[in-house]
Image (cartoon, rainbow, N blue to C red; front, side):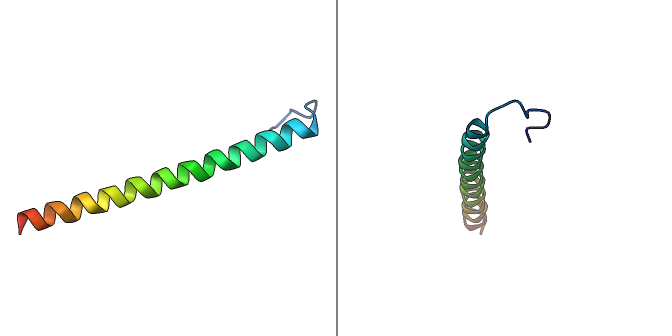
Length: 50
């Protein structure tokens, strides 16, 4: 992360880090939502097959 970017202002680095952290949280939420939907789909398929 930011290797060789020492010329960038510290404020810029902090802003990018905060933005990346928010994006990461969003990505984790989307993955969790996708996993939940997948589990619901599997359970639904099992119920239909029974």
